[in-house]
Image (cartoon, rainbow, N blue to C red; front, side, top):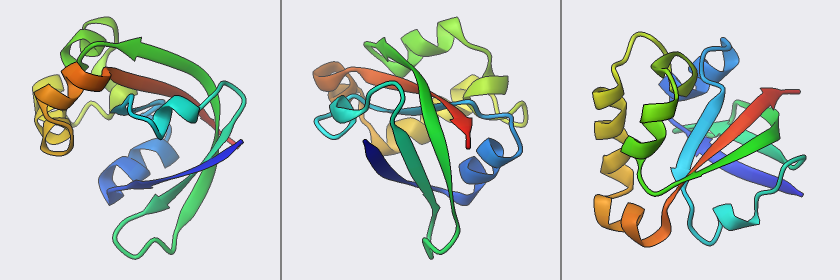
Length: 113
């Protein structure tokens, strides 16, 4: 199955340069459709003109972002230019703690193709 996701330029570039290897999302209805072997087309915000495709090679379920961050280094969740707390702050602008508790979170292990 093919999926599409939008990314802010910074995170788009982190994936392209090879540092970010886990895309982090809420485990909502849309993300429940993702399976290992699927592909995701990532579109660079705001214009959505640049894109790349990645293959889903793993799925990681957690209750919260904080739980996930205990198991992984920032170097594969984003980039070493950020701290874990900075990344959590960014994620929680999109996905509140209440939403995390409601749906859980998903780490999508990806490889560029």
